[in-house]
Image (cartoon, rainbow, N blue to C red):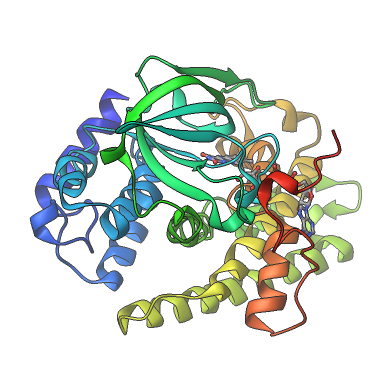
Length: 366
Ligand SMILES: Cc1cc2nc3c(=O)[nH]c(=O)nc-3n(C[C@H](O)[C@H](O)[C@H](O)COP(=O)(O)OP(=O)(O)OC[C@H]3O[C@@H](n4cnc5c(N)ncnc54)[C@H](O)[C@@H]3O)c2cc1C
């Protein structure tokens, strides 16, 4: 964590943290293409982990877009410099894909709001200073209309963070419980009842961030296949495997040109639209497929994840553990396909029976 903070501060001081953000907010005042090129160059080096990604990629941009002037002045600079870390408190046991089904309640009490409820899968909540919280402020209107966004202090009384243990052995995300958490009305981000619109600002940033690709690819599997001997010669001679690698090559090229389209849109000052969902839906499945095949090729060596001993420094062992999560985080495959079908291809909408019903009257099955 110390190394990550140092690296972030060093980048901020040189104008390389948040390259596209205005200089007055601690950013680099540069263009999107400069930010993309810096990201590509940085990824070629071993750098400390990035606990700032959720804050700088999603939460702080939401505060910058929708928040009040005092919040911008208070939060943006320290986040850019890596002094404060944020988490995103959207998903709940009753609503992950359906973010608008959030049940965590915020009830007005004088100039305060009192929060009760539970969030889940909150990445980094255990080391975060602040969280962006979506809460239900009016259960008497349809679900999308009764939500409001707030920022909260993660160390305040009434916030309890419980880590979730993952199959990789790590605990990167958490359950977060709120019991009579009292916050000021000035902690509201956007208008009362406008939480759904505000959350869309966060979610579009999230899909762009997750759809970035990277990591070991089909060329690494090809190298592995050339090195591994089977009774019939190098594994790379196997026709079935060659076909798979060719398919991954085609998908990787498609992703590359889709990313170029996004880059072109950004460089023209346009906001990438729902088509950016394609990057994530393809790259997460591609990563999982390649990792499965690579570990089959590595045979018993596939169980070694120590980077000093594992083939290809354990790149595919990590990918195998992370890929299922990537197919869920920031929108599952099915949800992203719905978005592509409805908003890119213009196909008929999914059936949404609860759209015009007051949230309190939506059947819960209980
Ligand atoms: C690694 C990781 C990190 C995460 N970090 C955070 C975080 O920091 N903050 C946060 O708030 N959340 C976070 N999440 C939660 C994530 O956003 C949700 O898990 C995700 O949105 C899916 O919600 P769910 O798990 O409740 O699944 P559900 O919504 O219950 O979905 C269950 C299944 O039903 C399918 N399904 C649901 N609705 C439809 C539909 N309309 N049409 C077709 N199929 C459908 C889904 O595709 C899925 O297969 C994280 C998740 C992961 C895996």
